[in-house]
Amino acid sequence: MTCKNDEIKELLPAYLGQELDFAALKRVEAHLASCEDCRSELAILAMLSEEAVPDPGQAFWMEMPLKVRREVREKREKRSSLTARFLRPFAVPRWTWAATAAAVLITALWLVVQPSPVKVAFDGSDSLFEETGGGEPLDLAELSPTQLDAAVLWAQNQFATETDAVNEDLLENPERDLSDDLSNLNGKELDRLYEMLKKEEQNLRNKGRKRTPREKEIG
Amino acid sequence: MAPMDEDLDLITRTAAGEQEAFNELVIKYQKPLYSLLYRMVSNHEDAADLLQKTFVRAFTGIAGFERRSSFKTWLYQIAINLAKNVYRDRARAGHIPLDDVVISRDPRTLETLIEKESRQQLRQQFAGLPEKQRLTLLLRVQENRKFEEIADIMKCSLGTAKANYHYAVQKLKKKLAGQ
Image (cartoon, rainbow over all chains, first blue to last red; front, side, top):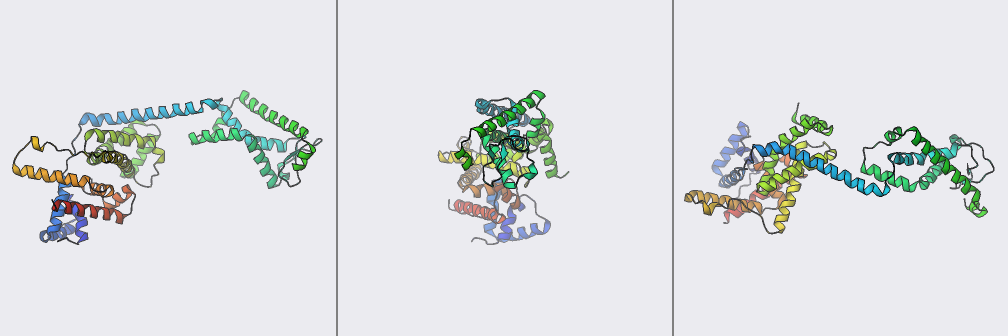
């Protein structure tokens, strides 16, 4: 007959492992004395628990940390060489990643705050840059949130490819801090970044001059 | 220091590149993990290979250890998942090896033979249990894990862990009684 005493059944492994307190031990023993079903269950559990696990020997245990360490190192090396191979087609000097990331925001601010023929359109449309005959220097405080958003959006579009590459690089190295990269730039690299930004501004000025009246209308 | 805090300290030191802490973690857990794996796969080669893989996976993915459960529970989860794959591959190939095939070559007394035979039948029936039931029974009876710990390791509720244990035992009893 199948016993329905779940409380005792749950205690059987602990009884086998001699983990019960005195009161529980007595309760289980009293039940076992009169329950054949639980006795056969205990016999099965005892057989299972007695299944021996052979000891592979001292040398095996001593070698394990070394083996694990070696494999962890190999895996890390393999992973970094794969990453390097993946990034090779885009290989550029390390500082360029930082420069392009920084350029996205810096360019937006540069174009807004510098005295320049390129000025922000205040007509409320999405268009940001228009040809002017010598605009006044703009202050960030003068810009509405929409205009500031439009400036950032423009800069993001200009550097979309570079931004994607930077994001990819950050996904590969989540612990990477771009401010560290920036602080690693030497004077020459900073000069180059500055030149890049100046060139971009010049391009925009030229672009602004070449725009047709129709383009201006559209914005 | 409490065992869990001790592990967290060792993990932090391992992450900082301290070799001694890394060794200490391996030495601390290699025996219980090997025992669990051996009971799951029934041979030394696979158990040894899985043990190494368990540690490698743990140490390469240590950043993924969320510290919500103990490091030991996390290691058990990795080991069980790796061993499940081996077990499933074997089941797919229709080959679930059972050791102890020495009976015919080593006949002793009739009593020993009968006992060995019933042990072999038990192993056979145990190996044929559904995966979750077999693992729960193994953890509870052979590894002496409490139901709360089993629920953590198997990522299920306490009630499910108890039910899996109960069904496993009932099945074994029925099958062995029918033979």
